[in-house]
Image (cartoon, rainbow, N blue to C red; front, side, top):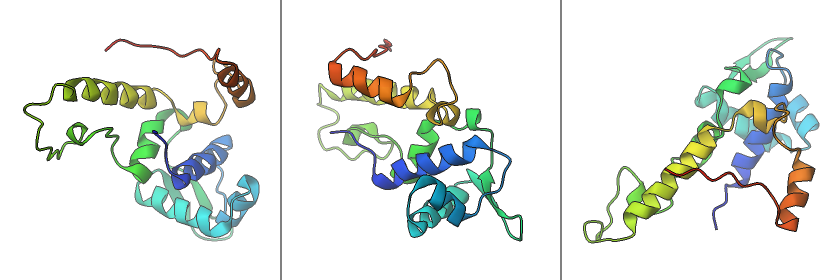
Length: 159
């Protein structure tokens, strides 16, 4: 099953919270309270995001963390790259592939196309959209209900 780690999920929650007021500096403790995540987790997430250049920190009375770029310029793919590394469904999907049967494999090309499609889909979802500021996207509860009912709109793009 394809699934991102909890830290990546928490990072999107923290970033979405920062995206509510992109120019405001928020202390880690304030973000922990607003997101209902524990402070050590929020601190760890912020440290990684700062190292990746996605957030900026400032010290002092009015210090804290804020987004380094506007929410519409940060993609889901970029967030996943920070915490999960590059998307690679199979060994041959990596740039450093060391698959012993790669030259003889019949399915590798198809898996690489799937990998590229997933990457493109993630690149086309912005933090602004993740934060719920895109009226074109259904709200989470509505989409969840559609998924459970088996009627969720799933855009298919040929590559």
